[in-house]
Length: 78
Image (cartoon, rainbow, N blue to C red; front, side):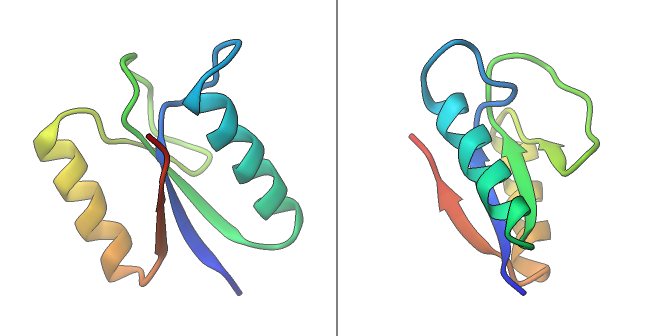
C-alpha cells in the first residue's frame, strides 16, 4: 500500500496549491493509498481526518520526523 504525506495548504480556497493538494489527496485515497496532509497553510486548522497542522518551522519539523518514521513518501506542493 502506498503511504504518502502531501505537504501544502489545507483546506483549499478557490484556487492555488491547496486545490492541488486536495485533488491529489482525494485521488490517491480513492485508490487505496494511506494519505496524510501536512497543512503548512496560513490558517490554523485542527488535526483530524489525515490532516496534520504543520505551520511554522518547529511544527513542520515535528511533522516531517513523524512521517519519516512512518516511512511515507513526502510530496511537497509549492
